[in-house]
Length: 262
Length: 376
Image 1: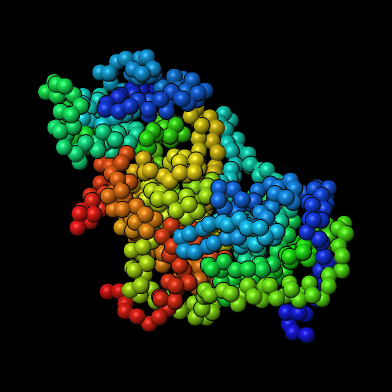
Image 2: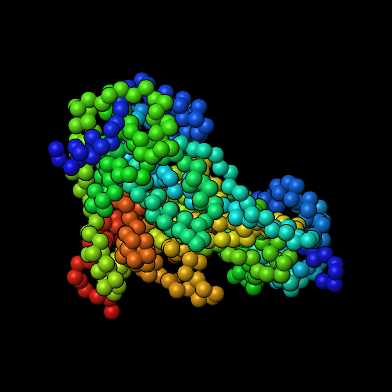
């Protein structure tokens, strides 16, 4: 980099912009960022140069249109390190629920002229299209994790990946288990940590937005969900939700759907 | 006089009427202690700072079963009618997250972080948790390298134990020899009766407090009621662990087919280790500020059920849930005997209650110890 500040780009694909907001919500820490990197593209914040060559690209959103497919390849070519941020970019996002549905029927029901919409048959994670160097999960990503990842990349190392389930964060924070104390189905035991146990701390079960933890024992957890009163269809929807295209959750939800038809 | 009655008399308790319990709080506060004790929050017994005796969980009973914890409010005036919540003493001494040191660049400087500690009287500690604390003390305080963070917190505590006059369905402290009656690891002992409390000193530190209380002479009936209560609580326990020698046989059952059956239910989520009052594993991580000029070394609870716990470089020693559950159980019930001088379980039953799928170590242990088919 020859003494120059590393260049950073923030790209958006099919998404709600919430992960970019997680960056903008950093407060004072955000003000340090321009001292460390040159932000050449971050349309939501101002700088607009989507074609620029950069050292670090943060990519939000999933691939859901032919234009997306073309653009993500360009981003890959122009970026030394490509980091996907959030559930859409890492696991297809909520919009990927359409992958399981009759897309044409929905389009005709919602849009007066569905033939004008140019979309792929599926919404998919960035890693299904180009090589990804690092993934930060969540809906939205945690600002803490983004800062930590940027720091490590600036240090010249790859960010450390979380592997533990949300339960570990709950217990470290002294959050009372919603599943055990209220009988509320919670995805925490199979979901990757990093959020700081946000939902359980607010008294509700985890809904799995960070996607699969290192170990996912979905047959055991879904049996427990059934004991707690969720039928297999409803249990399937816990896995086929925000991180529905993450392989372990996708398989778990599909298995539960099949079982509910037996 | 039988042994239990002898013990009761040797405690030499005095009586404090129920409506005078606030005087204990007042004396503790005047003696410079923050009072830390049980309260109901988010549907569970949790320990936190208390300012008055009426914050204690009056009339609260607990329903504890595998994977199930509920509290019930009754008209009973007793404030220790429950057994426990997910934590008691462990987070007080072995913090879930601790800053060990910080560093800054230009010039590079390290400074040890100091835990924020004040004299703390913990009221309502159970026998199983005091036994667990003794195990943690042995782990963290043994020379030549006692842990300074643990030690500072540990030395700040005044422990006010209370006999268990009831057992939850998941309690099995009688079989591990750790309860339901207090043994000898407290500063002040308490037993709750309908009409009030019996209190006695367990240490000089405790005596400095009890000497300031206006205790009445306990009657023979009250002493008998105290003995009867813990005796009944012990006989009410239906769960148990085999004795220590038999547990050593776990190491001869490493290929037992039952490990795989447990693994099919186990989520590898680590809840059992987090609520276990004796588990002491931690990980350390380095957290650097965005500007790269300052950093902190953080220690936080880890679990033998996590992927990184057994990772060495790129090699993971225990990659399957079966291996992790087997490691946890054999280490806790057999390995600790040579490392710590006793098993690492004090019969509190938290790992059974707070397991999201209700895996019961007393059941799994017996199943593994039984002669059975071997994995192939």
